[in-house]
Structure formats: C-alpha cells, structure tokens
Amino acid sequence: MAPPSPAPALGAVLAQFRAGDLASAESGIAAVLAGAPADAQALHLGGEIASRAGDLVLAARRLRAAAATAPAPEVLASLARVQWRLGEVGSALEGARRSLALRPGFVPALLVEAFGLFATGDREGCRRSLAATGLPDTDPMTVEFAFQAVAEIVRDGRRVFAQDRAPPDAGRPLSLTVVTCSVDEGKLARCRAALRASLAPGFEHLEIRAPRSLAEAYNGALAQARGEAIVFVHDDVEVLSPGLDALLARALARADVVGVAGTRRLAGPTLGWAGQREMRGWLVHGSSASATWDFSALALRAGLDAGMQALDGCFMAARTAAARATGFDAATFDGFHFYDLDFCLRARRAGLAVAVDTGILVAHASRGGLGPAWEAQAKRFVSKFAPIGQGPSEPNHFHAVRFGTADEARAMQAELDGFCAALGSREP
Image 1 (cartoon, rainbow, N blue to C red):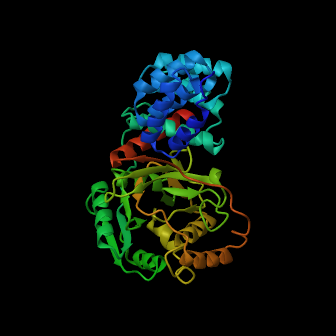
Image 2 (tube, helix red, strand yellow; image 1 turned 90 degrees about the vertical axis):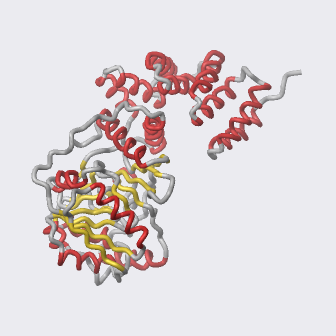
Image 3 (cartoon, helix red, strand yellow; image 1 turned 60 degrees about the horizontal axis):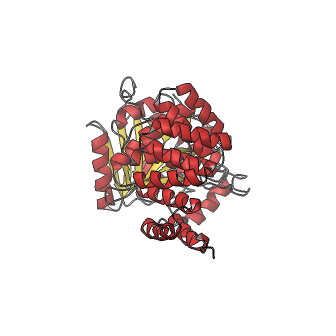
C-alpha cells in the first residue's frame, strides 16, 4: 500500500507559514519530512520556512534536496536566493540561470541574477536583468517581492546596493523655523529630541499647545516665523535622517514645498485615491517609545520628485515666503484634517513645485484614521475642489517591512536607494 499523501498536512503548514507562525510551521514541516523525506513539495516549503526564520544552512540543505528530486524553476530560484544570502554568488547566479532557462522572465530568478551581477561588478548586466522584471511599475506582487528581497539584505546585516554618499552640497544653509502642535508632552519631548539630534543648533522651534485647528495654528506660526524655511511636523513624528539642515536646503533649492510621502495626482480626499502608480515616498511607522520600526515604501522610486500635487502633512517643509503666499484655509478646514492636501494642491495650482524627497526619512507613530471628524472635513474638501473625489478610488497599499531598530530602518533607506539607482528609478 502506498504511503498517505502529505498534501493535507502541507496545507496546514502553509497556512501557518503565511500567517507568520514560523515556529508552528517549522514543527509541522519537520513532522511531514520525517514521514516523507524525499517529497519535493515538502522540501521546498521547508526551505522557505527555514529561510524566513533565518536558518539559511537548513534552508539550503532542504532546497538542494528538492532541486535534486524535482528541479522546477520555483525550487531553483528559491535555492539561488538562499545561496545569494549565504554569500555564494557564483552558485546563486548558476541556479538563477537554470531557473530562467526553464521559465524565461521568472521574476524571482531575475532578481537573484540581478543581485549577483551587481555584486560581481557587472552593472550593465544587472540593469538588463532588472529591466526584464518590469520594475518599478509592474504588478504590486512583483514590487512587494523585490522590496522584501532588498529587506533581506538589511536583515542579514549586509551592504550591497547602499553607497557611501557625501553629504549633499546645498550651498549656504537656510535658517529654519520648525512648527509643532501638541497636547501630549511625551510625544512632544520625543519629537523635540529627534529634531535636536538632526538639526544644527540655532533653529527656531515654535511649540503650539492645544491648537483649535492645525490650519489656524500654522497660519499663526507663519506670521511670526523668522526662518527662511519652515517645517511643519506632527508631534508624533521623529526625524531619523541626520543632517536635516543640508537635506532641506538641497531639496528646497529644487522645490518650493517638500515632504516624505505624496501623490502626483490628487483625485480624491486621500493621497491614494488615484492609485498606487501615482504615489511616491518612503516612511517609517514607529517611535522610540516602541520596539518596532515599520519601513514603508509607496513606490520603488528614489530621490526628489517635484511633480507632486499633494503631500502627507505629518512632515512638510517649504520656503517661508512660498508658504505665506499660499497660506492655510482655516475657515474651511477648522479641525485636524485636509489642511495639508488643500495647502499643497493650491500651491501646485499657483505654479509652485511640490516635491517628495526619499532622502528625508521620518518615523510617524500614527497610521491615521478615517473617523467622523475626517469624514466631515472630507465633504468640505470634495465640495471645494469638485470634481475631485467624484470618481471611484483606485487600489493602493504600502509595501512594508518590520525592523527592530531605527538604525536598521536607516540601513533599509540606504539599501533601497542604491537598488533604485541600479534599477534606474532614482532621481539624481
């Protein structure tokens, strides 16, 4: 009698793996392999589980066994990816090319090939392989796969695409006024400490307690600001980039308003209304008060993009003269929403350059919420800017990876910046 198929047990293990329960998945796959040690499907899944858990030696052993039994393109690409992570560049390239010979254009294999070629100094070959993936504007699953592959480099403690860059040559630094509204002393203290770590002494910090609305508070700050440039930052935001002065001076030499996340086409009352392809920017969700730092990317595009129509208001900087000329609509937006979209859209329509700069990295503790207050202000926004918001919203999402430290989040920024340069999707 033939032994029972491991398929039902594999389904349960796969569900645990997809749910992120790696301990249960490893226990389950070990039991399956004890009864069917040569089952290629179980070996493949076991290799992926061990790889995700960081046991690359076990992952390679299982995947080699799977490839020897059933050298399918998926198995060969998985093995090549693990070999790449182990530093076995030659073996990784060979495995990726075997996979591509069986399935031309297979994205996981193309990425391993591109990574390996970059590591060997073949930049042109790397660009050809990356071009074949369709990145950065292909389907979200492919973008997510590439994003996670770059994150693995950081998790493994390596530097591959990241380049040591000289500080930006911004010429004469701008005097800065920073504006923060808050009713929470703990949040404000963390925000203040991060600013002081990133900026040279001497910046003006206007701390506005218990504002009636952000638009009203920001108009008041504009009236008294002494800096050539003004930064509006939420109290639950911590700047992670060192040398923010130089970064802002460089960005504001090329744009009038700059932020960290935005859209090239504002089609409704959210940044993502026009869909994923219009969105730009990188952002960390986390705080020094927590133990997690979730690095999120809206697109595999880096550098400064001055074609935005709107920015997320968690962090916005502008030349003070440009901000004063635009102002905030405190009469319409008398709460804590839509001051940012309204400000940016009017600035853009007035001919000002509104930009996202991925060189500036901040951590935002909040992910926002669309409650009754937001909905009431959204109706005002849609009414003011009709026909914006009258069409259906397009699909959009963040690509995110969790790290345990702010240093890892900064390393991800550097690695992703270098990857985008290799991809050809980084502005100079």
